[in-house]
Image 1 (cartoon, rainbow, N blue to C red):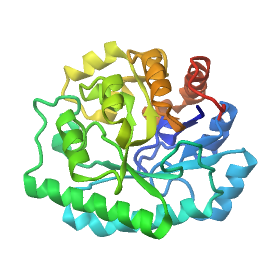
Image 2: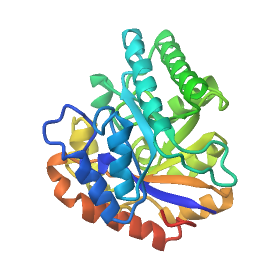
Image 3: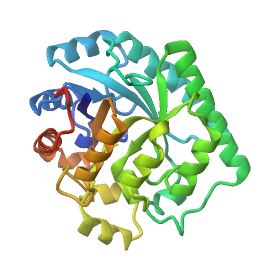
Image 4: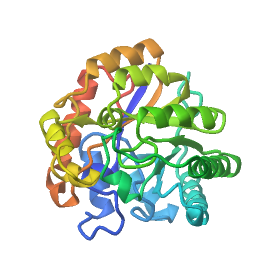
Length: 312
């Protein structure tokens, strides 16, 4: 079993490209390398250079590779489709110009991936983690979102051979168990896979171990997070946006929270999972002074716990 442990810019608070407090992208590369990682994600479009030349040079100097790009945007609105497809072109073209990543034996689709997440709806942002109070899309809106996802996935694969993986995300219109079940009925695996995230599953009221088992046949890529249970219980009692909850510290280094990583390790061994696992820990970028220490601690916990066959 070869599991490559990677990281992502959200560990430094990079989720909104317009946030004035974002650290420089070169600092993220520096600290990811210092923490022992060899793989990371691009983060939101426009954070790292879209010019493959300087980005590839900076990655090579630090022995890093890019394992995924991200569309984190409104997947519902028909008026946003052209923007979504433009992002798909830009991200996938960049991914294909960067050094290739070899597939592991047993992988169905190798990196790099295009991680697709719905975002940008105030009514769902304030209902993150609350399945009972979160509004659901009307059938026509849901089908429009499914069509947008299909178009993104087909463009990514047919033109760039980049595999799209859909990521249920707190505060978006694909978050809860019923939406995940409906998604996998409407988007067949041959069109797009899943990127399941242990922290978002827990935040949405799902058991990460049971859900990973249930959707193993759909899953190409994994995100690992951990949740501080005391902070989680506090923010669930507040009317709060998801990233404001992250700024309060609801996400913590892997192994220090409530998620049962020994059980996840046993499950992945049983499933013979191969490929990439990306550590994430969303925070306010004004708190990025602690990022290096936290991502290093998460990586060390996972390697000590046996989550890697090739320490990457």
